Length: 259
Image (cartoon, rainbow, N blue to C red; front, side, top):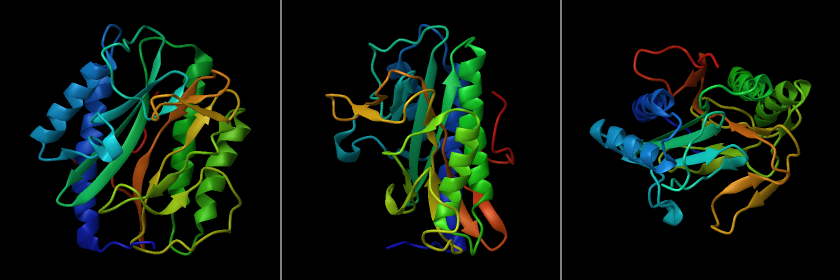
């Protein structure tokens, strides 16, 4: 069942989402060679709790971290660890969820650690651009397939691949609600987009094959061919006035930052 939210619900989700955005901004500014992903996890948890939120991921189905931190060929669900130390030229996908007043905000970015090759930077820019295209497809009367088609069009035109086995999702009082939000598909298909729907839209793309491999830890998901992967995500509300991005910092109207 797809749960539609009231205007008050959306404001509460935006409050949670603001903490998410601030946390991601802090991590993007802080991450540097020599830091471990556990260092970043601890920074994130302190900030989330100080801002009045709770890390949604921590303890979810046994997940031990407050964030997911996934370097290089790891697509998503990386467990923060003091054994994973960042080096110059890495990329790191960071996914953050925050619960506040009973509602969840969920967003992700992929960060370049120092200087990276232009092809890698283009991978990140393309993933970010595909998310922007997906947000712009979120209009009342549209179809869920419009979102996936928007992502796929941007990504494949640029010569990258869309991961097929991982999807976005509805979000609200729970981190995962209906519907699933694919990052590929045919425009004009799927459920109708209606006011009050809230979706975590999260393109996951690779510079190679789209098939995945799940690690023995049961969480970490890698590209099957060891190609680099990028992941960007926003929580978006469908409203009569157009798409409303719920994971922006207070006072911020900018969805995408320069890469």
